[in-house]
Amino acid sequence: MAASRRLFLILNGKAAQREDVRGAIAAVRERGNHVQVRVTFEDGDSERYAKEGMRLAREGEIDVIVAGGGDGTLNQVVNASLVEDSSPKCSFGLLPLGTANDFAHGAGLPAADPWAALALCAEGDATSIDVGEVENRVFVNLLTGGTGSRITVETDPAMKKLMGGAAYIFTGIGRLHDLQPCRGEFKADGFAWKGEFLAMAIGNGRMAGGGIELCPDAKVDDGMLDLMVVPFLSRETLGETLRTIAQNGLGELANTVVRAKADRFEIQCDDELFVNLDGEPDSGRSFDIRVRPKALRFHLPE
Image 1: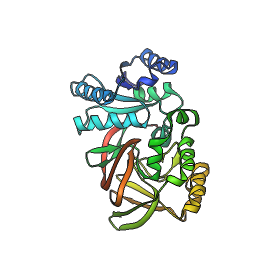
Image 2: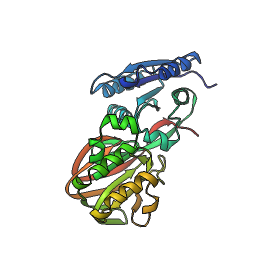
Image 3: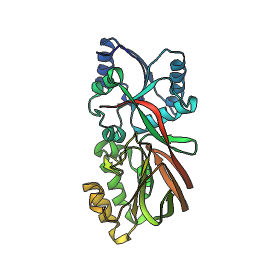
């Protein structure tokens, strides 16, 4: 067994009473590791605790900051940490407790086993990974945008809990008459595409929307970002397109999906584009998106 570690767990308050989570923390402690727990209660807690964790890391008091929650919790913790210190003195890990857990599934983390996920942070090696960066915010998994991002914002939380990631697609199907295409231009070194689109994604990771592989070739440690654009074909085919994505991912749309790989992408849209960074909402008409190579040391399966 590896030497004992000092973990700083920022735990989403919604999961604080879960017996499997409590059991995982107890088991990791029984193996000689120290676990400090901070439970979020209101907006801003994740960021505040992340700053506390970074201070403790600088003082040599902790080894790993663990985000206990979904993709949004991970995003909040990493953003606040990198704002506090661009070269963290600790490593990072994820205890996946969200609805979709897209980053965890895409990275091969044991999303269904809190003990295994926490043990990986306590006993596994850390590897250097990239993050994506837009303006002053970063994303660990994906930036997604277009009609699909509005669906994410509008999807009923109770429906998400019941149906998981499929809830996003069914919300979209139910709102077909309200969905409008986005129009924009995407540029990178040696690449350009312009037109109307249904959805787009720029991936450091692979999955979003509840397990849909939007950027199947993306790697978190290659110093690159992967672009995916689903062109808007026609309103008559919109419903069928959403159903196809829900049932089979993007595989059947391979001939129409636009893809590119680069370390920087520029986006310019005619109207405001709604986006999500690991599930955290934002919007704008122009975006300059870059990769920040090897920004974090992160505990991932071998």
